[in-house]
Image (cartoon, rainbow, N blue to C red):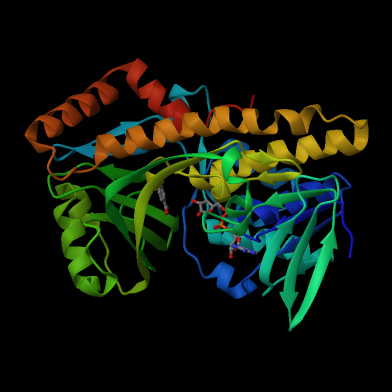
Length: 391
Ligand code: APR
Ligand code: PHB
């Protein structure tokens, strides 16, 4: 088999890249180690920046998002028992975010890919990028007991944090930066109406809480928990009781509880790989970087990476110019580090840090007080939350 771009991984990065390349007339094959259902079973974030919304439109995968997604013009910060609204729209000259689940984004991208009849190899094992430092790269994999090889011009490593592409990069040419936080997020999804029409980010003495949503009838809530906690330790009742304790009286009174559809614990991590290109292999999305979910940037960074990468490949094929692919890593990393900073900052401001003591709590409260009462402070939060422009 031969293709122009072999994409490893059918998460949001790989699927969006595949669709953007197809629209630009560039042939691609996706190789994924799991089944489509497994990929769709992962519940993840749900806030899309305008940049991501625009890329989904360009990919032709925006129909259901336009019908079912919820545009949000603000978020609320809850601290010292009171909620304060950040007017994202007013502070950014009319920008907003779209609340639409990553699972739905993935499903929509899978559907358009299937409609166009593009090749995705699911349940491939022993996937391996080969010879990517030469001009004849290949992807080797096994399927149904047979070894296959795809010859290509480029490999896109869209295979997530645990993928094979970053692991295959030459160790003397790669540098990684990491920060692990001493807590996790316990998430619960339920078919209950959201507690409030906008997201609530809460800093409380019992720890962080987030009230998010997927639709008018489906809610997603999170609680900061110690890393030692297990999902089995948390009954639905215990979750709701703890969430109530972390909300203000009005939200507590409005909270509708119900059985969980899904419950899981995710650790919080900041991680960046430099560079994001190794010869003819390009990393994108979680394969190259992880952000803690507090700033809702993971999926959006994945989208901007593949936006840049598709442009770079289009320039290569249409104009026979390598300028885009040569600039890719640096261009992505500038945006990645800004999102890393924002996610780290939101995480630092909103969580309880064990052992940091009351001084830290007081500084957090002062910072939140400053952010909500200073136009400069709230504008800085707002412009990062809605997403920095692509440069
Ligand atoms: N071979 C083939 N596929 C692989 C391999 C491998 N060796 N290793 C991993 N994969 C697949 C995974 O099964 C997964 O479907 O690559 C895909 C990577 O998808 P994601 O982890 O969702 O990463 P990405 O597409 O970059 O999406 C980033 O996901 O984790 C969130 O916050 C993150 O929202 C962001 C988004
Ligand atoms: C979510 O809805 O899952 C979500 C929303 C905002 C965040 C993180 C997660 O910051």
